[in-house]
Length: 116
Image (tube, rainbow, N blue to C red; front, side, top):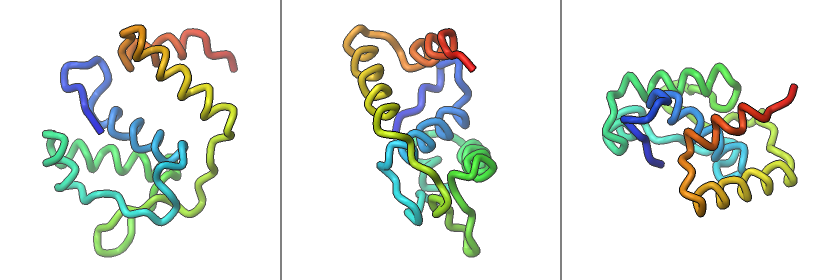
């Protein structure tokens, strides 16, 4: 996991998006324990409050559950993303990276073409 402290997306949002993506992609499974707030903050070079904010947002989104004793785990109630959507996301990631398009720019472009 990497955080761009100079990017346009706040660090807490980057953490939320990256962990949420790992869960949606099935790379983090139900019941899996997330790093402690302090450990992840140390690893990423951000304030513990930034990680705590991201974890609270993930909990609000239903992706994780805070448990007694301070541990945070991937929710057992999460639904996984369908294979075609996951494959398309991986292709977009690969193409963007090979073309030198940043994550922020790729997200901006995706939001621009998104239809409800």
